[in-house]
Length: 56
Image (tube, one colour):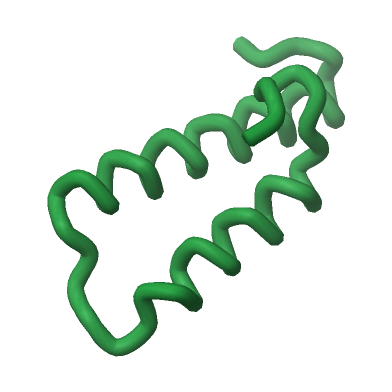
């Protein structure tokens, strides 16, 4: 997994889709939900950086 500042929103979107596709048809475990939430947080920050030049 690349560091958040090295990853584009598109790359993170692909990573999220791959992660969820591997778990299709079932509920995420609590650990998997945590991973998903981290990926989503990184995706949001990358989008902010791309638009505004900041992760805040």
